[in-house]
Image (cartoon, rainbow, N blue to C red):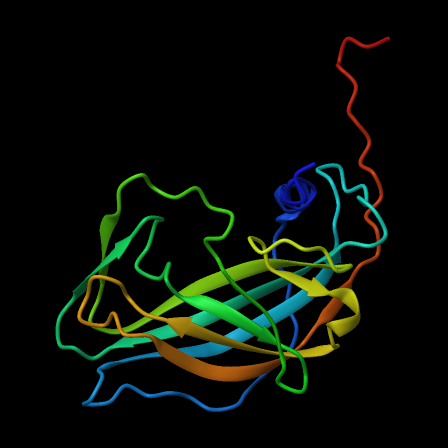
Amino acid sequence: MNASAPIQKLFALSLLTLTGCQVWPSGTQMASDAYPASIEIVKAEASLHRVADANGQALGEDFFMLRTQCVVRVENCSGKTQSVLSHFGSAFDDLRIRVRDENGRRLATTTHTLWADPLLNGQWFPLAKGMTEVELSSATLVGPGLVDDEYPLIIDRELTKTIQLEYFGGFPGSDLSRAIQSNRVVVKVADRTTPVPRKPVPLPQDHV
């Protein structure tokens, strides 16, 4: 049996709207004359959810989902709009998020494009000069230790109540293709693991 199949199913059934919690910034990498670009997390949220199906029914007691949502500010100080190559849908698809525990130990690295279908041929997307804010999110499985190199997984006993988040990456095909790193923020993980009751299935209007 393919070990990744159940993980893919869990993720496909559980990508819901992200919810929030408090954030504390801890520094910023600024654009400079040497490299005129920067990325900065200006707002971040994280929450832990029980993995559930489309009806809200929990799919087991061992698996949860860590969801993050960040507002990221990109500064393009090159003096011109840059063209960025992507196989997904925006100029920000090379930006990846790294999740660390409260002591700074890395838990997982993922991207908001992980579950998106890539385009067969890459397309060019504009990155305007100056400041641009974009909202990026991620979903990372939390559970027992499964061996699957393709999908990020956090071992449940390693996830701390407070985590650290940072973005890194570049803008392929542009003058800003070199990898850069954002500030690191500390985020309290909201616990939303209470199972959602199964939703009643509506009966047809002509049902007697």
